[in-house]
Length: 235
Image 1 (cartoon, rainbow, N blue to C red):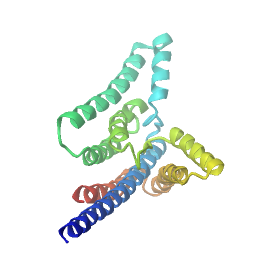
Image 2 (cartoon, rainbow, N blue to C red):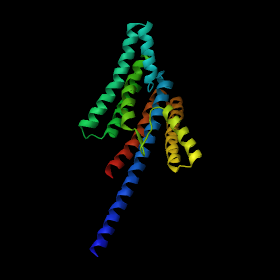
Image 3 (tube, helix red, strand yellow):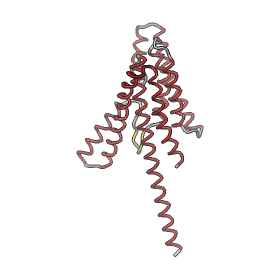
Image 4 (cartoon, helix red, strand yellow):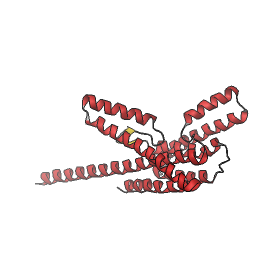
């Protein structure tokens, strides 16, 4: 009799763990897609309202850095080297916090993004486009690490090139082999891409209506993600 009770108790514990895990995955997915929506929104905002498209393009900055070293002015070299240093510093800080503290890094990332929205909005439009991108370099570098993906899939919330490759590969494999896990993977990456580009579309509309102040609407998106991060933490 006791043995049957123990087995039943263990089954209940296992069921509760599975339910909690499913809830955590659901909350993680919502928060992840929210951050992709935010990134698309702010990248488009910086292009449309601030005239800089460099916010998540460290590859372009590194190319420009090499070109600057090969034949541009010392000031251009310094500006691009500072952009690299800012990006790398965010990775270093994130790694240190992950290994040495118990701070919730997802919440920290959202708070960094929140402060970045205010800073970028207040920077004058006449500033060098690269300098306007500095806060975004730091924030997106931190966000890239804080929201790495879900379901064991590594999906960036701040750019789409690898997500597009993963989507195409996963759905192709699903069509060839019928593996349901590949369909799940492709669906997740595709959703991330769609939310990212939805953010771009919404940003275009917002900038047309509100101009520079459109940055403030991104705070609503951050609030959405923060809510689900908090919900996940409470499970």
